Image 1 (tube, rainbow, N blue to C red):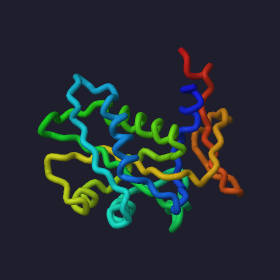
Image 2 (cartoon, rainbow, N blue to C red):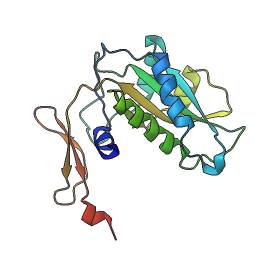
Image 3 (cartoon, rainbow, N blue to C red):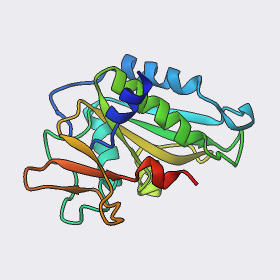
Image 4 (cartoon, rainbow, N blue to C red):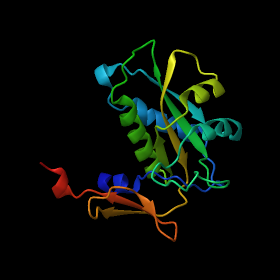
Length: 187
């Protein structure tokens, strides 16, 4: 059921570093993105795939991992993603990428969840540094990085208490994600 897959598709930030992801798996996830809706059907997004240690090590330091967890610098050795999909806009096709990159990232994460993997959409990126490290052509605008791997953390969804939407980790490193109630969302 789609609701179950959506509830399982969380922003995972710690992964089992021993589980590798193949380029074929990444290509199958981009194939899902290819079939996703696109504003004006421009299909102006391109995807840089990384599942090798060398490229992953170029991408990792350009990402910020969890703004609400001020004392956590991000995943440590053995917890880092096994792969990344860097979503870029091709400015030769369009200069307006609208909601497309969010839509394709969601498609990628839902597909990853169905495969038993997990990921995190990361928008806090040192884009200039990443572009330089990856030797990306000037025409490509970095929009989002999707980190992927086998999740290695427990995430609990819970109703918001006292209006606080901040996610947090408890003393057992369980990641809690407060969600607004359905009643609160519907006007």
